[in-house]
Length: 502
Image (tube, rainbow, N blue to C red; front, side, top):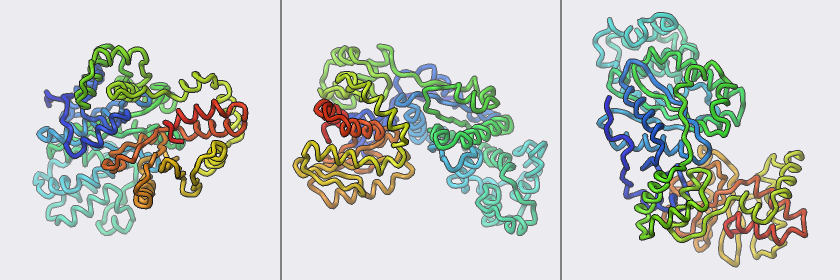
């Protein structure tokens, strides 16, 4: 399959342009899926894989990038591109890794069950060459003989659509109780054999000229939860790779945020690493003059400013960012004639407080003070507000502070997973309704990468998102409480780190 226009600059949907501009002004890289700057080797490799998507073998890439360099942006660009170009019959199924469902095969089967049941049932219902169903299942050789009975039942002549749907659910695992299999007089399918079931369903989709790109993001979240779960995920990945030669087409992309890189995969599951080593791709920070100039030009077009791009590039070159996310943030600030945001490390260095900060961090870690941080955080915060004689009211249970003087609410989030964000959204909406004249500063963990698009509250000029590290701010507040002589300078550090909001 030849794709000539991949990596073109995509149009901004009009309905999202307000949220997009607001996000981009704050450097929200995951919400920039309209243009990929640089990364020519990476783009060439991905394009090559996509052009094999209708071939006789499934393909994969493991995308590795440090935080903020745009791995999610890459996956979402592909999703938007193929949503825009439906002539290719390619669908990008983007999902964040699920820390509770670490078997990759079962995870992919759930996607197929949720979104492609009608496509598969239509194919089965219209299939008339029952003598050739073996072509979909490696002619029932090796482990595929375990699903021969099931496959023949699925394609049995005379099945009603309702019957086919029920049999389909036997394969995906939605119907797993033995009584369902007894009803159809077939042996119960084990989870291990759902690998062959996945092959069958993917081959059916290929025969129906429907090709899938599975884009599984943030698998490091599984590693953070449990090394055992992470190894289980990688083992299921390896088992799927071993079946690629039986799958006609499709493309699996898995992304991983880490400063360690390939060694993490190699150490955890060397059997997988040896199989996919040639398919590992790195996303690098933008460093070349050409790439930075392209980024400046793209953002300038977006903001419709009249700045001299050469001056912007020169100014940025004096203070280059360590990752692409911060590069966007700093260039956006220059285009808007705003001050460049400094990292906490830069602020601490400027005030000569690195040693004190690191000593307090180490002490708190030894004391296990970061456990249940969402509850412990507010005691030193309360001390801080009382010390600076702030005129406000701290609601510890509800995690917000009302500054009566400035009529601003600071709302604190500690959860790092967007999948669990619905309750936060409800609370923010409630605050807006209860205090309609107040501005709201949402302190959101950096790892959450919260955007206005995710909030769905783009029409409120009194709402802002402040990315922060709860652990770091907690250390600053504890340092402030324990060091009276440093309080004046620490007050300045806290003020700068929180963008003058507390």
